[in-house]
Length: 151
Image 1 (cartoon, rainbow, N blue to C red):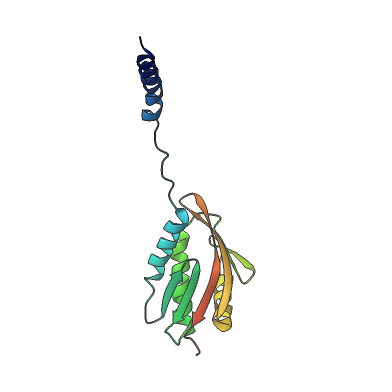
Image 2: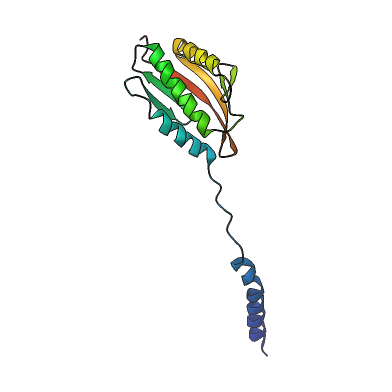
């Protein structure tokens, strides 16, 4: 056998041994982007708020609330409906920190209503959240800006 033939055979043997390693490899499964999924759920749920009361816009992790109602009680009722809905879509241990105060979505939320009222007065408050969504922890942080009421 000539040198060229030996090289061809050697290459064929190497390919024959290596090919099954690549063919047998399964691609890595795609990992869902739980943060994007939860933000989608949040956008969907805030979109259900009566537009005569408020319009909520979510940009990244920042939330802007343009209040349309002059009745604070109506605004607070809509906020409570949203929080109650989010409680059904998040897991135990979901926490929210607004203006430095911690709240748990599976506990009594009357104090959270006060934080929202304070935010209405302040106009802009910072928040962080540890959301348990689909069994995964999603961390969010940003600002909640209120406009429209009392302007």
